[in-house]
Length: 270
Image (cartoon, one colour):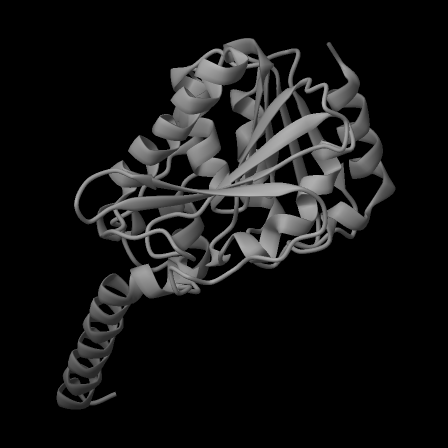
């Protein structure tokens, strides 16, 4: 190939690489979060008893929290449920019955910009607001009656809270190793570690988690590939469990009997 032609194509390649990298950097918030904002006066309609709370943080930030209650007035504790990156509490409310049928309250918070939660979203705010809800749960139920549950994006937040506290247990559904590691699977030719605004390093949090951990992940997950979660096995304690669900995807693990049986078993433990 002529040297001038080669250099011209090299310049084009470098330009395209740089342009795509800039786009990925500035649109990563869009790729990572898919919220659906709701009007402050929107009325939720859920099966079963629930209560909605609006927790003011400051003049601009408000946490929208929904508490789902078991039918029995005797409560065994509370599950703090950190949901995924889409829409709002309304999308995940149907999973509350996994826990309320065992006598647990379920508290779901919306992240800033999701549902009725207001304020600018940052990684530090995700952590801070999750810890504020945990403090509320602790004051009502005590630390050892709190179960932390993370789904997808929420696994990073649940793992952070677990690293800072001493709750009953941590359960993760479709987790990742870290956000930069996940981005690397989609754009392997870019320096994901330095480009990622969000880190959510579950692998680091696991070093500080003292409570029992259970992880569920499907082998056919195309959103967070199985191998991303499998890296966490090296960070688990001997008492922890990593449950592989053959054929499971990112969205249907709740339909698998093995997950239902395991959840039921975990929730019945004292």
